[in-house]
Image (cartoon, rainbow, N blue to C red; front, side, top):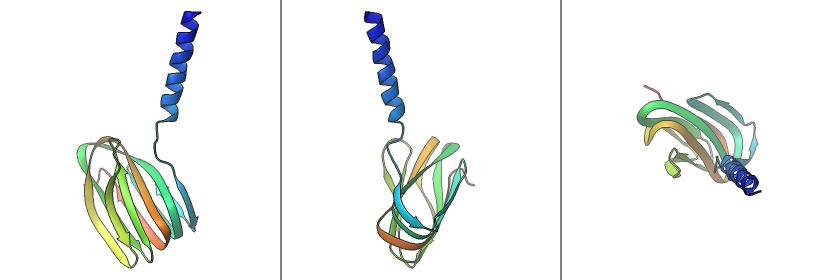
Length: 133
């Protein structure tokens, strides 16, 4: 009987660990929203967007930075990254501006990218890449 409870306890712990693998979730309203996500790069384009969009990229380099490009017609968007369990700001872009830069220290493994807006934005186009030369 004791062995049975041990097995049940271990299975419940494993289930909770699997369910908690991703601490970020996407919640957004968008119009004409297109995304293309590969292993180490992604592009996101929209006519209208409000909320949070999350995706994962994988880097094979031992260390490096994230390359990002983007433009936004109206509103404001903040992009964060997380590769070690800590959400760090990568950049903020406001309407009428563009960005083309690198930043954010990362190491080999999974990188979560989080795109957030607190209000409706329009005319967004973003490309994010890890492992670029």
